[in-house]
Length: 79
Image (cartoon, rainbow, N blue to C red; front, top):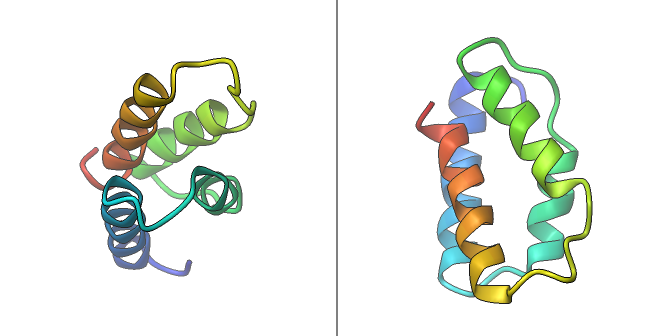
């Protein structure tokens, strides 16, 4: 992504699709891990999301995992 506007739009789209069940967690994970560095206040949120999605977290309760995933995505576009 080239601009903050692109980041915000994409993060919201990914969040909404994942929340609606139209996107698998692994796709979301790969998208987050592929994000570049961004300036503050977005940079910190992107780094936190990357740290959250880096491990697979297969042992977590699926409902709790999705809630946490969605919160990390939302933090990207609502810093």
